Length: 237
Image (cartoon, rainbow, N blue to C red):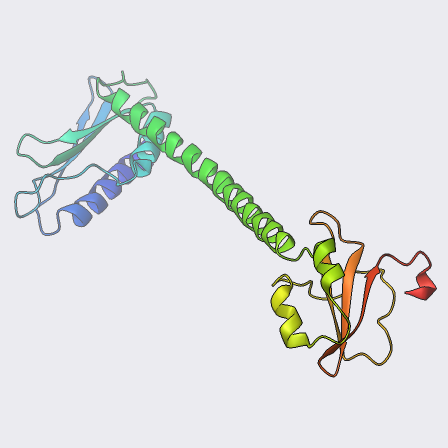
């Protein structure tokens, strides 16, 4: 486990150096301390060309968290941070004989990275749940608003209905009627009069589907008008 942890520390640090400081020299130093029964590994690289500060081990902190966990399970301790020359250094100290190595003072940094990674996961989960739910709520509100708008514009008042007279031209008559008639007859109303070309339906109340006013036209002239309601018997519909 110690050998795998050392390999992983070197691999992750080299990947980081190649990504953030390409072309910069990298130094790997492994020291075995028989008296302390410990093994230390250090990977350092200077600041990238151009003098820009070298970033941390991983952009999201998850690589550092995983590396710290691997070293901890092997009984060791991981440290990381800026090097004296302005670059970046990753250091790990691991036991040779199974004895745990005391945690270094910088270990809380990894704990903060772990906490940040957990917050990012929680934030992502919240966004994954809240965003679709909010979209559904907004869409539902828009649909209801549109339906309410359409319903309010499709109501024919009793006075308007009484002023409508058979024999009037459709083109002239529709100018005095609501501009949003229903798309068709509501379910359950009786059949349209025979011989008519088309019938137009209007609500009597914005909150009720039936009864409705029906205006039927033949040859472009209003031929009949009626207040129609649900037919109680299915065979009459």
